[in-house]
Image 1: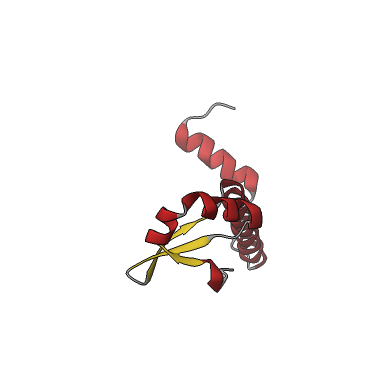
Image 2 (image 1 turned 90 degrees about the vertical axis):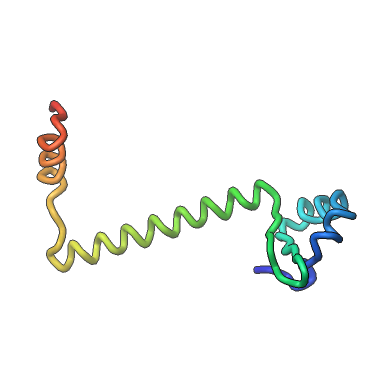
Length: 95
């Protein structure tokens, strides 16, 4: 969640980059930078960004698994062995 206190102009960020980087690393909150009063860029520390990507990947995986289970329960699924065998034959993959 973006804290309204963490919205700053790009010019302010450029003038005080070191201070803002210390703040970002300390509190792990991203900064929103504005240009002409419009939000344009989000700046955050690399560790927090990586953690966000990992959480997103987990969430997407859970959604995909849930959708697959629902399809299977509706009878839309296929046996994995049959699907793999079809792929082997289609692409000439030896056993």
